Length: 119
Image 1 (cartoon, one colour):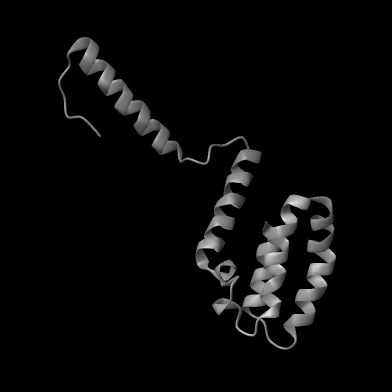
Image 2 (spheres, rainbow, N blue to C red; image 1 turned 90 degrees about the vertical axis):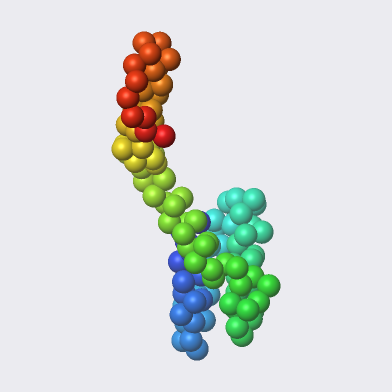
């Protein structure tokens, strides 16, 4: 996914000299991965199709150049990094707040303690 995004970024800044760089990168990085994983072959073909259009942003595969896709890749990368370090993708403060709300509910239901509730 990260190599595909790098290729997409090369296409985004594409000029006459960048097409050769895009093709070299595709041969070196993308082609071997596509050969190893047939499931990614369709996505790889879509990414490579960006080179076929004079204005890739307004083409049938223009969604690949969207910032939504970039955010998706960033999020997936961030999650992978956090998982590799045995950390949750959710911030610790969110876990603490969930525990607090649970504890408040338990105190209110079981003991009848009244206090301002966080929701």
